[in-house]
Amino acid sequence: MRIAVVGTGYVGLVTGSCLADSGNEVTCIDIDREKIERLERGEIPIYEPGLDDVVERNREAKRLRFTADLGPAVRAARLVLLAVGTPPAADGSADLSAMWAVVEQIAPHLAKNAIVVTKSTVPVGTSARIAARLKELTGRDCDVASNPEFLKEGAAIDDFMKPDRVVVGVRRPEVADALKNLYAPFLRTEKPFLVMSPESAEMTKYVANALLATKISFINEAANLCERMNADIDDVRRGIGHDSRIGFAFLFPGVGYGGSCFPKDVQALASLARQHGVEPRILDAVHEVNGRQKSVLGEKIAVYFGGNLRGRSIAIWGLSFKPRTDDIRDAPSLVLIDRLLELGANVRVHDPEAMANVCRLYGDKLQYFELQIDALQGADALAIVTEWTEFRHPDFDEMARLMKGRVIFDGRNLYNPSAVATAGFTYHCIGKTPLGPAPSRS
Ligand SMILES: NC(=O)c1ccc[n+]([C@@H]2O[C@H](COP(=O)([O-])OP(=O)(O)OC[C@H]3O[C@@H](n4cnc5c(N)ncnc54)[C@H](O)[C@@H]3O)[C@@H](O)[C@H]2O)c1
Image (cartoon, rainbow, N blue to C red):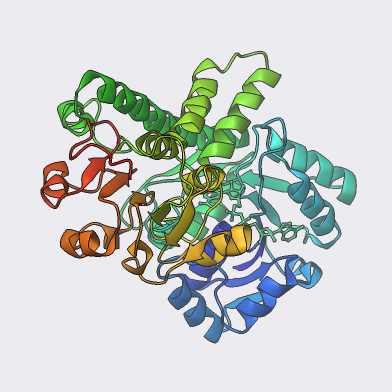
């Protein structure tokens, strides 16, 4: 099948390369010419485990091509996948300007039997509106399907190749058949291919993300209460997780969710609800609780040091919004960095993949360290924001030798509190009473 993917970001590049890997001829299109030139040279513009191999293999086999010239690729395509960004507008609704620009651009080139497929996360009703606009532009009925993407950054290739389910929203069974054929190589373990209306498919994506975000804000609120009640959120988590109605997934306390999806999708669904006269009380609370949670670590540090960080050095491990990605969109680390700089701290950061992206935002306001251990030299405190596996078993004795202060603020509850306290550190994490010596004011 000949496929054009418009928008070559996290979703477009993963989708395009995985579809090429199953034998399709795919052209990935982007308006960012620099990105396209890098891809043509074999450079991968984002960090995503395993992506480089899939791209390289299919680029060499000439099943995967990159271009900034939309016309020829769309003219040749039976499937035109739309994977441009849908960021939040100022009022929280989804900004569809890139999507509408693409609809205008593809219209003159669409083949008669082409199927347009929205992979971007878009408000309910968008596929119908795209179909209506394409009819105005082309003078004929065009098939527009919704096929929301559920991949997780950091595990995107695996998620695409072995999805839990594929959801498609279509108006005609023939379109469902074409998409079922496309996804057949990825559904060989009998995972479901779910066919519904475009409206239900669009709603499914938002509801899935909103529910996951709700679980995170819920456990974070419970964790904050545990701290006041001298309870331990990890014990509570174990206590509830074994209940088969509850389970353990997405119930880890932390410093709030970030990334390109949950923050914007929760707000977009709330905005959609308001537009249609439904008061989104839970969604608003989820968003608000998350906003507060992102500042929890900074406030713990501020309180510990008496509200003044002038002359203090704070090391941060972990900048990406989650491990195994370089994505820092809406990352909790940015809220912490801003607060520490505001309080006058000298901020020393390390992340295995995201430092270049953070450097583009902060430049020389921060100090950057390729090795996690080097960020600790002379630091008064360490803050952990992202749970990269390489942070899980540090040498506490070596850390104590390098650091000036003996305090760790762990936003991801990585360590056994008594082991950290035994090594001489005061340990503040999420949802537990701090353990270790009281702060020194020196
Ligand atoms: N990132 C994820 O984990 C994820 C997961 C599921 C769904 N989604 C959804 O998928 C969509 C894309 O997300 P992303 O993270 O890949 O975004 P992204 O910002 O990484 O990529 C979007 C790409 O579209 C390109 N683009 C913008 N306007 C264009 C135009 N007119 N023509 C061609 N290209 C254009 C941009 O240059 C960019 O490369 C969003 O709706 C998002 O909500 C993202």
